Length: 351
Image 1: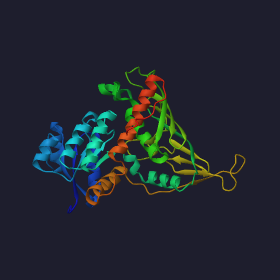
Image 2: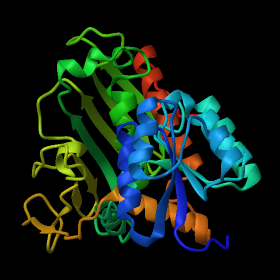
Image 3: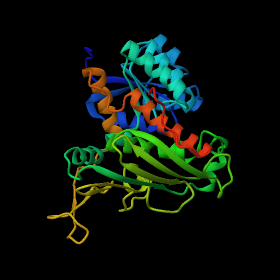
Image 4: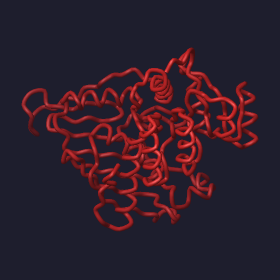
């Protein structure tokens, strides 16, 4: 695209995740530079001033003044599609924080608009950028565990009572399925293939809010593999990506695993990358060994920024495209519908 020097990135939304993106841009070295902060809050204006970059109240104001090479959208979920469509209309690539939208209908509108105009839209399922996920996928794709038969994931954590002092966190559209499980579903899709049907139960028995605090999900993958996921934000436990992957220093690390992927020749624990297999003949009476796969840790948010710059500068294909974000969202919609109806639900056919 003929971009000289560091790729300039605007950050829209100066909340917690927006500020993490700002830090990631700073840590990405010469690949990227912060262009602008976009957020109508007065505190965001002060934040931009502290960083020495321009501030704008809206994307329109920013685009009218100066166009960055790319935009990171860390705005509220309900604004994602409108914000991203504005970027598409201006021909500017965008990295949209997950979820791509609050529903698949509007998400599909965005994805189709981006594909028609050939403007890259990336979705911030940043866990895919973790080196350990690349290592896990390489092991699976190499046949190290054979054909995948079964998958189990756990996302158990405890959100303190004051987390729910914010009203929207107690209402429909919140809850651990939409806020937390969407990351786990995206990783399992990436590692194990497409999910073709879903069954689910959910419960709000502990807190009694209008949204679930726990859910149990049964998945059928296109390959024929079966999966189970248990998610809860009211369990004190060490088995969640947040506490096991050591990605975010805000969470106390544990040495536990939260995913197990089982195949005909072995099984893989994640995120500790422990590979189990029979050294000789396969069988339940045979010796079983484990091997630790070692990878060098690196912040996936920083890797995501560097990847975004390559998409913009070099035309690299997005690791998590808008359509990939749509497919993951379709599975989450299917989980919610299956829990509400008691039926087996197939994720959207047209995604």
